[in-house]
Length: 111
View 1: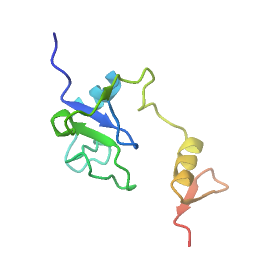
View 2 (view 1 turned 60 degrees about the vertical axis):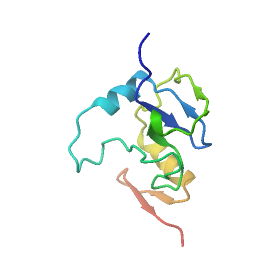
View 3 (view 1 turned 180 degrees about the vertical axis):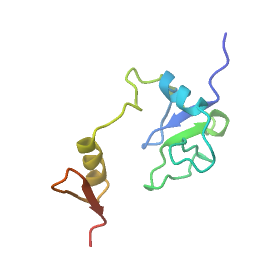
View 4 (view 1 turned 45 degrees about the vertical axis):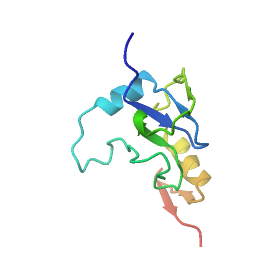
């Protein structure tokens, strides 16, 4: 029997799940300390990310005792998104996103 993977993913609702194989590869990828693409790994279960959400990668040992861990997702949660999907993601976070004539976007906090 293989040992459980060192990390799990905490969902926005506080539940936990095993990692998809691509998430494992992402966590095992070497990154430099200042690389903004490196994974965010929570220090504690209750720690929130930059959006104020509880979700993120967490060491399995830091998960509260008795927390059910769901199986990994069938679809890759790290699949790349296009510009329109990213703009919608930002809108869903409450930001104003305006498409410019050259195809770029301007993002700002609402007043």
